[in-house]
Length: 257
Image (cartoon, rainbow, N blue to C red; front, side, top):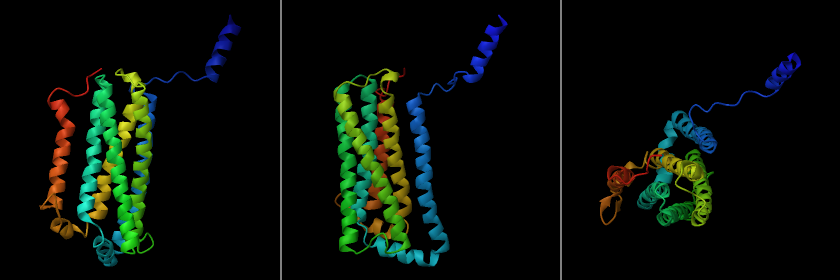
């Protein structure tokens, strides 16, 4: 009897007790949250470099911003930002359709998200072509341009990776790999969180890199047939936020499990 107790005690020492998941958070979802935490640190390091340049080189910052700011097509950037933000609406609707068992609408909204994501990426690549090929501004032109290309390029790489993963998700959706039960769509939820994170990062990039030192040009640029670009951006942001909350307000949001 004593030998059996000793063996059991020795067994317990070799193998720790099972983990108690008090938060009831799926492993895949928890992994994505940790990954996003590391991504915040990554983007944060680039933003800190930008802030450092602003502090130690304030005398030269205006010339850097003026140099690249005059070359930035603020009307195109406004359109492009609204395109990317709209993709948060479409992937949100795709997730709602998934939880309601509407696979056809899930695929449609997901396909629209893919189109919007790659449209944003294509416009950004064309912006690079204009800056480098026509304006002769590259990553090594100045400290400000180096930060500009680093941050926007890093963000663009995340959009590209996300777009590829969305295509895989679309194929899986068409094959019926996702279900309405919580345990059947963890992968979809994690990717949706990643895509929203990519959109949030662009808010910081746009607000801190494009707008400072370039506000007058942005307000003087007209879009949508005569609306100032900054006003159109604000209106578009309000509409996007309203669309994100519309399903819940009309009682057509994601069902609670």
